[in-house]
Length: 105
Image 1 (tube, rainbow, N blue to C red):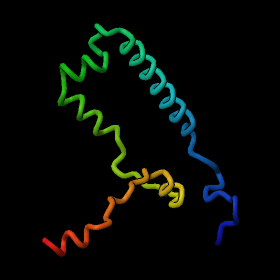
Image 2: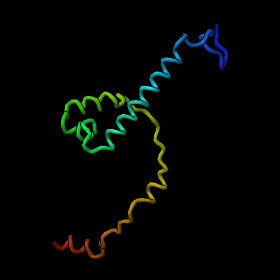
Image 3: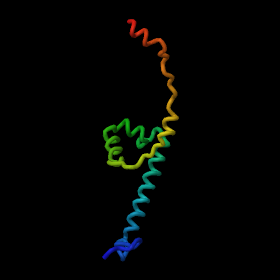
Image 4: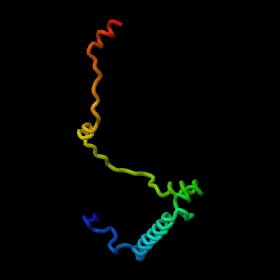
């Protein structure tokens, strides 16, 4: 059976409790964000990100590495004419008389 455009592959919808779990994740992320914001506002707080990075550099970089995506993909569009116009103008060196000098040397 082929699905029609806009038709769900799961006619009964998401499993029960799915929205609750997502809401809990959002709530926990917001609580963590707020706690870290308060800690970073106080330079003396042990959870201040700068203090933590200095006190526990290995753990700090381990956490950072786990937060970064493993792959990033995207498309870059470049306006070549605009990029070339942005390059600085470099005047060519004066070469008049150079050929005769090179030949005579």
